[in-house]
Image 1 (cartoon, rainbow over the protein chains, first blue to last red):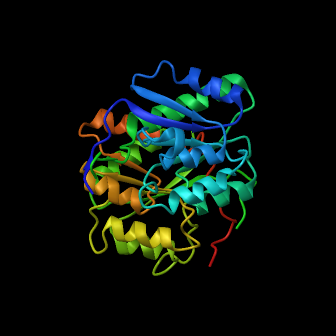
Image 2: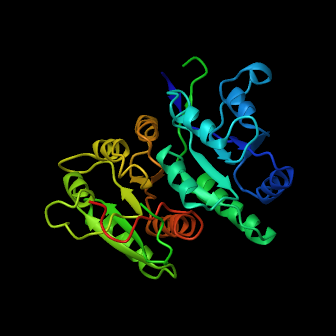
Amino acid sequence: MNFYQAKQPLDILVCEDNLGDVYIITNSLKNSEIKYNLHHVANGEAAIDYLQQLGDYKNISRPDLILLDLNLPKKHGFEVLKEIKSDIKLKSIPVVILTSSQAEQDVLKSYELYCSCFVTKPFELKEFVRAIQKIEKFWLNLVQLPPKLAPNG
Amino acid sequence: MAINPIKKPVEILLGEDNPGDVYLVRSSLTDSQLNHSFYHVNDGEEVMAYLHHQKGYQNVFLPDLILLDLNLPKKNGFEVLAEIKADPKLKIIPVIILTSSNTAKDIQKSYQLCANSYIVKPADYFAFFQAIKNLEMFWLDLVKLPFKSSVNTN
């Protein structure tokens, strides 16, 4: 397999069924200095189709970072996470769990399934925006994201 | 295992053999507003001894967060990472690779071994300080860490 370093714009996949949350995430990232493309799927099955480049998602490039809600229709976030982390081509993509849950068993299960980190969505709008900005500051500005697979790799 | 309901300090374990880098990480964290305890070991075997409560580490808590250099003596960071992520008790602990390497091969290998994130050590002092601050604001202030029960889990 050939790799090349992830170059801007970065591709971020948001797996989220709540459109209000998608709106907040999109707007909170708007002023980022890092160039990125935000992609959105609204259920767990679509997340897997997207990542496996199936159906409507045949020509997309795989994301550099995934924000994953847990309580998704059709396929639960845990199932999506498990499939990502057991697929050699997908497992290196960091998955940030972004959920309204703060239940201990959800936190532990997410880490057991090799999520990168677990973030609880704050209830307050202002805090939610700050949380997304912290995710942006850490993952887009500081972290070295995995190299992309070369197109012929 | 249970998430500790009482807010105890976040325990950070650094696996790093370069004393200069240890000093930089330690001093970047020192003036933090966020409650934490900082521990340091010099090589890969010591990291594993620490995590398995062996040698002099019988009474330590498991850390809440591990910062791991790749180029460690005795047992390198990849081996340490692989052992942590294959161990049912240890795998939930977030491991952040903190290394001077920025080669695609090392980055890819770290993520394949389930590193939680990968940070290249910035070359100058100020940027290094900023990087640790950024890391701290994210992992200590925002992220829900998989806290453990109060006594060591042996």
